Image (tube, rainbow, N blue to C red; front, side, top):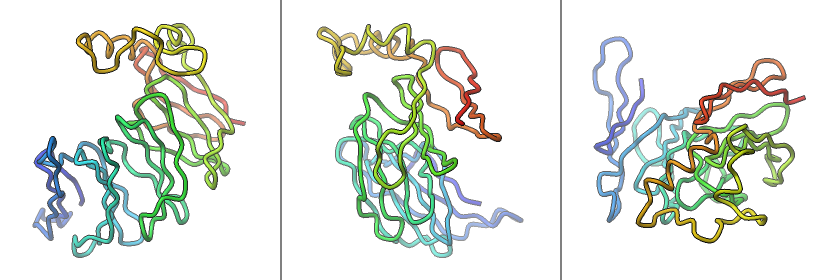
Length: 222
């Protein structure tokens, strides 16, 4: 059994008796020295992939806990649980507002795209498309090899309130400050967009996900 904590430790335990097999300590960073691990891990062929608040995504040997590689995203937590598909790892970032495809063997960047806000949920693959949600209330489907947008769905909250935060070019409108003096009010306004913090679930050709506008969505992805 594998799990991490807010002290920046990641553990491997014997699932039958709870004995500690190994533990790994994240590097930490100036403003987040504990390197908190906020969400889950992904395991693929004896490699464990985790994100941290110290701006790193880590690939660890599942048997020993030793590092395989790490990639640092300067200026942003990596909250989203990494998603592995074929030879690549897909994940979004927090404050740098990006979505990445990197090599699962080396951690080198294959492509990256900008998104308007944070990505906290894990991605999902279906019929050759990578899907992921964003705090802007839009569920995107992108080409796994290029990152080109192939499909998108906007929540009710996003359709109703998008113009309160973004201008016609998709940038923050004049007068809106993400981390200004009234940042708590800004956060409340962001969540009126129907932010998608969840990881989508697919059944057949229907994708299910929840959002912060209080809705549970079932969306056809034919």
